[in-house]
Image: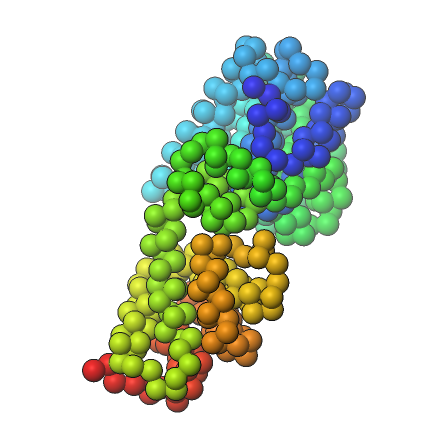
Length: 365
């Protein structure tokens, strides 16, 4: 147990160990970096280390305070879940009680005014059971604009016995006055070799698909741990059909090609709630095609299991048509929140690439 169990970002871990060993942990920290690299996990580890009875620059996970910290976190998560499920939106922020270790996250789309008000009201009081109170504010960019000034006042007059840890993927989503009052700890994507070792250790992903899983994870431990090869391939298949259909060289494709094209666009757009995730797969495939077309290093290709097909598509499409497909995906991304027919949008860009007049659909029989 302890910081040794944390995966990746050794410089960040070393920085926190150094703060703890010196006894000079700042009153406010800002953890920034990509999603899924363990920012919240390390923040909660630091919260335990600040209160551990046995370790000076780590936490044991076994002493009474470490065990009590886990109980506080469990109670916090239960309370957040209950409030999110409440049908009475007016009462979601009522009756807040904060422990010495408190995880603060959005209850709705935002971290509410009441949540930050409660933080301020207890931040200057002595902890009940721990030597130091720690507030971990996850998704700090979601703090409601009306609550920002309250938080800023706490940061301007830091409490002696309270540490605040703000977590935000992009620090520039926060006000400069917030950023300037926090010591920043920057996180990087976890090395592919570390992700690959994790996948091999867990043995949850078949060996033949571990290279693909490591590339799709893109440095995210969370993505690697939740990667479902079968589900990924199921969601990727319509893109493969789409690219195969638009990369034919003949100007008048066979009717079977049109059926494949229309079936693929239907499959890609039938679940609007998941369309943004679907688009990410499409973007990744197009980036791979560009990488191959420009003879870039294969180490940067994500869909490593499709290398031969990527080369075929790159040769048939050419950079100009790849750019047209990119523009079509960009347009789909912009329009996904509007009440428009996304399937027709993808079909229109396909017709453009195939040299067919926009708005005219070739016969399918």
